Image (tube, rainbow, N blue to C red; front, side):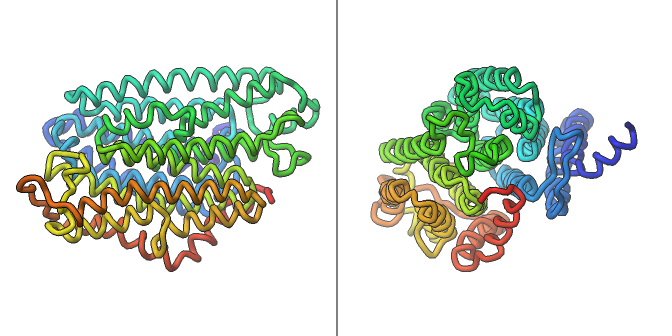
Length: 495
């Protein structure tokens, strides 16, 4: 048994690195109480080690700890995305006034980021219902505290409370659905559930339908899909900008990874692309398509009325979740690969937009769109960069956002989901309106009073280039990314 555990641990190196880092950060925070940079540095180094070791697992396909989790290219892809996001958030936090205002608690902040990253790593590879619940809870509990990190601000405490309440309800619903599924199949691992569904021919069981809907509701909450999105705007607005950016990319990526793996692993071969079609009279792809349309439309339409840029990006994040759900609706190899491609480009363009919002808010003391009046003239680099990120979020060429949406729409057209592609295109047009509002203020409106200068240091400019260059380069040279995404879903066995 000891030998088996040690052998499994050789495939559990990224997660082990994060566990060790978490403990080391907590100890360093206690020992070096007056020197928060030490636990901060330990946390950053630990995330880098976890990201590098995760990437080194590319090409592996092995179950670990008796099918509790699996190390495969799909999990590795999302682990790299989560690790990259966490590292970039760490670097962004160096210039966050909200984080620095509570410098004495920076060790706690670093530890919570590491623990949330660990939970997301486990979500990416979870293949057992118990591990799914544990990974979701670890991620959720860390995120709840992070969202209320600036507890001196009333909106931050409110955001954390709302997040906890909505999280508790959604987790309870999902747990009830999981308990029903276990009662029906007698299995906790996803493959065992699939075999039980095949062997017992339970495709007509109403209880299985109820269980599936409850589990889908839990996934919908995690990815901010309508009608499970209510927590997102308030939490994103009240949390520190760095935490908002982290949740909008890493948490959403882990949620999509878990949902896709659950749907693929529990699908019976006889059902073809109608994954999770546990009753012949109910078409699950259409349900996911409806969720996609509602999520895109609500996110884009409500964003039009937002004047707080962080809240606007929150609704934009909801809309982008709907765009990625379109590709999940197809549930072909091209569709799943399109989700992976989209997440990589979304990582750079969305974090880049949040990064500039954070810097401008730090200089002007406001996140309101009116504070961006004349910004393009008084801070040309900031203005041009923000324009590029917003154009990419819209999905216009020659930015990476265009490539992400191109592959999503291509998968839809290949699968003959014409009406869904049209709705997605119309939503992209709607999103252009509220993004252009920001661009108009930066270049076509004069400030109401003497504006505060927005000056970037050398280090801040370097980090900006980390976001900006991939957003532009991936818009014209994206073949390696596409190949990596397709290789990451090839072993799933879907058409």
